[in-house]
Amino acid sequence: MSKAATEDYRALDVRALHRAGVLVPGWSGNWNWWRNGEKRASIGLEVESRDSVRLRYQVTLNGQAEQMDYPVSVEWMPCHLGGERPWFLCPCCGRRVAKLYAHRLFACRHCLRLNYASQQANKRDRALDRSWDLRRALGCQEGFLIRPAELIRKPKGMHWRTFGRKIEQLKQVDARALDDARAMLASIERGVKIAEAALSRC
Image (cartoon, rainbow, N blue to C red; front, side, top):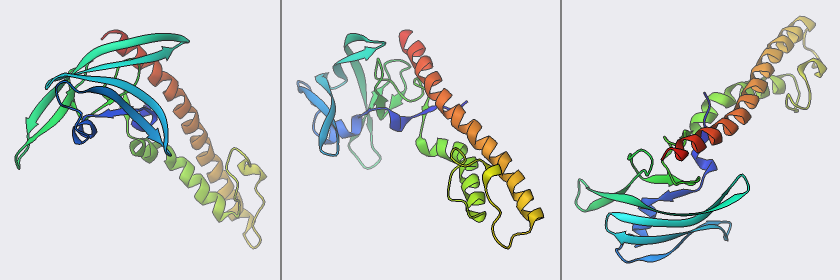
């Protein structure tokens, strides 16, 4: 089953908080997400102790606004070369993780059923990449959603038998690419529903 990608969610990275000097008992303020110099989102943080950070923010799901206010545990682990490294403990499953991803609750990628975009690309883009390779070999610069295989013209100098074989091959690849595209869209919707169900049990 395909999953949504971590890159589709805002991440709260405990390492970034540590580098910024935030993880100090008594620290209180906002943590912001920026893109192209523009602030896109913000969350309130209060470091209650060395082992606990309280999150405060508002979420809107299904048109309903909800104020969120809850602590997230922080665990410090010794490094091989000295010092300590902080980890979040996921509020839902207790896993030790570096990043929590924004949804109704901030949770780890396992609870939200997320993987990395590169992992998804290796699987779902294979048919699409193959489709483009075959189309370019036939002199076509348009994708399968714009020009179906049966509308591609035979390149000059190519034998009809060879052309027919390549078109049949392309039709099969295009069908797989279309199925992949449909599955990707469906997986996004499923991922949201599954995450909502998991987080409602937390």
